[in-house]
Length: 555
Image 1 (cartoon, helix red, strand yellow):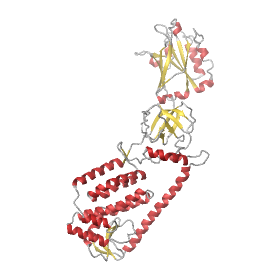
Image 2: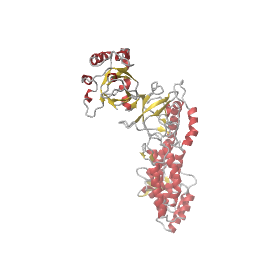
Image 3: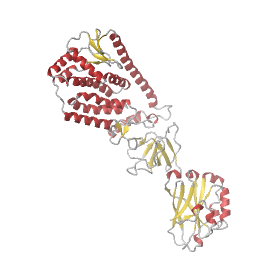
Image 4: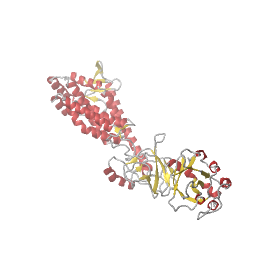
């Protein structure tokens, strides 16, 4: 918030000279823009935002193996981040990261500074209040006091105008000025501005904003008053400014004193007053609106190049799937879904999860699921600031085509309807579209024995033929230890017209695991009998998590 407000202050400083030539009554509105950035813990996101201050310090920087900042400017990031990454990088043998040690110290320093500022402001107001107890009411909310040297407004809920007893000339102009402060609610806004300064005292741009806001508040009141006066009235107003100016400034930070700030410049502006151009005023207001739109908003959090192909979670988070490229040090991955600019783009992940534990051991080529909050550091390679979950993905989650390792065995030709009745996808038969092949899912030695018993009546499972091994020979080593980690998926295919060979081109993982079978470019089979084949696929159980249906299609 502080950095984002700093950029807004810079934008206001650039715009301020134009307002000095326009209606100065609008000057304090300029400073409302950075004040809102400091006050509001949220902002509207727009694609047209020019504020680069969002996420300057990434949320996960304390636990990052390579701490970096994001200033919004690539050149500055490249100059600063190598120094930060080198000097503040964690040592695996230490109990805490350097930033985890430094941050509490800085937090205590910040609290101490804010406390000093608040105590000073409170002490100043109490000291002044004691002096004002002797004030005597003149009329309405106007009081005179022997113990003050300059007129000012004091009071938050019930503001009063206090005049020094020795004030002789220009009292009517002084009162008009101070009443204008009250009318503009400056007695409320200036204490709020000081409280913001107490909180953000470490930001020099906030000090600049507070100083100029105090000056511009006086200029705005001057402008409001002298716009109602004639030439002689403006001269009298200027003399009153000089008479009320003091060599020693008021110690309290909250009162609005008539002749306290930049008297010489104010007198010059009063004497040289000209009605501002309506065109300049309109241009200034339009620019004020644009600054508000461009700097009170933030760009949507997310990657410079979106990686949303995986979708959004119910809680608003994002996720995508990726392939591990390197596991040395940090985790380097390449998304296989998204709109990245080139194949060589990759992301670096912090292995530390949200709960502080480490990501599981991953190997190159593993497909992983990455959940994150949409924020990616503006660096190359791009870095996800804080991933929430990193784990291997199941085939059902990916919903994509994968290559298949399979074994083809001879099983003889059969057109028995019971072959389809025993299949796990028997609801696909008969199908008007055709093309479905029977699929058998075998998850245990008992199911394997039952499969052989049922289909052994219609197929030849214990004999090979013309270079093909038998089904029994292919599954002879599939014991309980095997089925603990793997599942067998079998597909029966045979020629219905001319003899030919077949192969599996791919599998589509999803809620339904679909196996794609196509005709092979081998020499023609010698006979239809030879073309009856059983295709055996071995799949690890983790990949089948989430799969509820199975099917095979002939292409």
